[in-house]
Image 1 (spheres, rainbow, N blue to C red):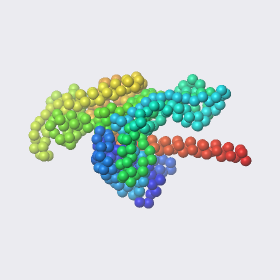
Image 2: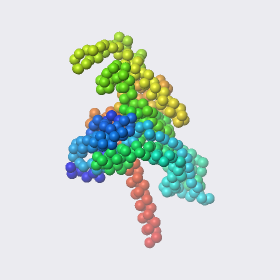
Image 3: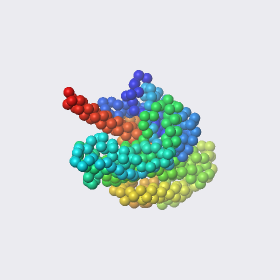
Image 4: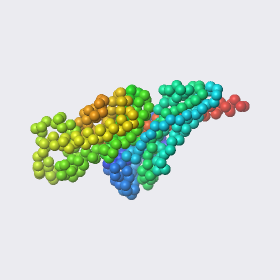
Length: 405
């Protein structure tokens, strides 16, 4: 294990059903796939950690497998946060620059953002992301980067993504127990969008739905910025559990049948199609109509998108989806789900496959890896931006000191 940990980027996607670790290396400034691991989640319930010990064991198992594949020591990671405890809120704030026109600096931008972020939050909430939507300079809106412009007053419209402090700390504690230092946290929907939603879609307006096992995280983009984030408490496991109850079988058997034969639109399944339910791998216990599966799955699919539509309506962004809707995550591949989305949201819908990294195996270019791949892309992009800002600040300081000599 000769590779230095500083040259690696590692992300940990702690889902309700699977723990995924993805490792990339920086090669000539670009990300290159190095290793990954996928293990069954333990100690998780409804997107939250319910038992620290088994959860930390699963984290450790995933990290160890990734280390062995990467042949390197993994010392730190970025973790994804999701689940019903994540919420978003829009805020506005600004600063006065004085009576005379002057140039906007990066420090002015930070001061305006700090003023906008000073909203009253409950004691148990903490901020995950501060995402500027637009800057307003002397009542001129639609500015993305005001640095270098001149004016008297700078305001910012800001989207603040928050989470439960205790839920976030539980994930961090599990990672620490697994020997990993957590360097940052990312809302899973924002990460998934990084890997699946194009710049044109963000500009026209698009909703990304990351359908996990226990919940569906969503983020809406409009005019290139995050306009809304939320979580709907329905995921792929709800479809599976409905089948398990309706067919009187185990959850594992129901999951297999859902993936192989499930469809969310009853009328799309020929009425003559029949399935043989087999026990013990050989014995046929009964025969059912394939449409019966759809009669169980379609109401749950319609409930999911009714909740999504109502959430978007309350957020004031239902009419802002000019580019439509993108479905990703492990639960997004259920047949017929796109048709239900288009029917209830009344916009085009597509399945979101992640942008592959260099040297990445083809089997990882699947919706269930969108969050992990997006976390790598997001972390790399933000670190490059921070480095550019720091370099600019150092150059200014050098110029100041050089002028004083």
